[in-house]
Length: 122
Length: 107
Image (tube, rainbow over all chains, first blue to last red; front, side):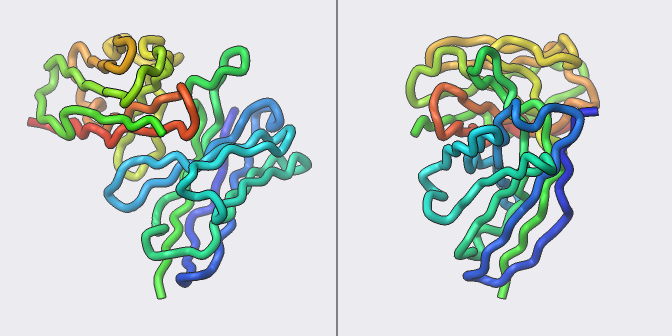
C-alpha cells in the first residue's frame, strides 16, 4: 500500500540542525512532489515547502528560506528536510506528505507520514 | 502570500447536526482549495479538493462549495467520528497556505 514512514522523535539544542527523513513506498517516488508541513504544539498547520524528487527542484516558504533544505534520494525512495539554526519555536511535529495533482496542477496532499516530533531545547 | 482565514475558530455541535465552516482567501483562488480533517495526535486527512470534489473514500455527508475568495465546508449530519479540527488550504500559488483551523467538538 502507499505509505510514507517517518521516524518518531528528535531532540536538538538551539542553533543545531535537524534532518528529518520520509521513506516512501507503494508508488513511484519520482512521480510525485513531496511536501513538508509542520505543526507546533497546539497550533495549526504550516506549509514549509516542496521538492520534486525527480528533478530536485524545490519551492520553499519565504519564512524558511536560508534555513531549510529539502532533498531526495531516489535510490531509496526517501525524502529529507533539513532545518538549520534551530530555535525553540521550531519545536513541532514535522510531516511529509505526497502531492496530489491533476495534469501537473496540485490540488491537495493525499498521503501523509505519521510525523516526526522535533523538540528544540537547551 | 495569500492569507487564509476560517470561521468560526471553534464550534460545539451535536450528533446529527448540520455544520458549516467558512474559509476566506485574501485574493481570488479560482476554486484551488482543499479541506482536511485532523484528529488529535494524527496526521491530517484530505477530505475535499478543488473546493467541491470529494476525495475517494470520504463520506458523502461532507460537501464543499464556493468561488472566488469565499468557500464553505458542510457536514450534513454530524457523526461521532467527525469531531475533529478542519483546515482549508489554498493551492492557487506558493506558499500553499493553510487556514488557522476550526475545531468541532461535542455540545
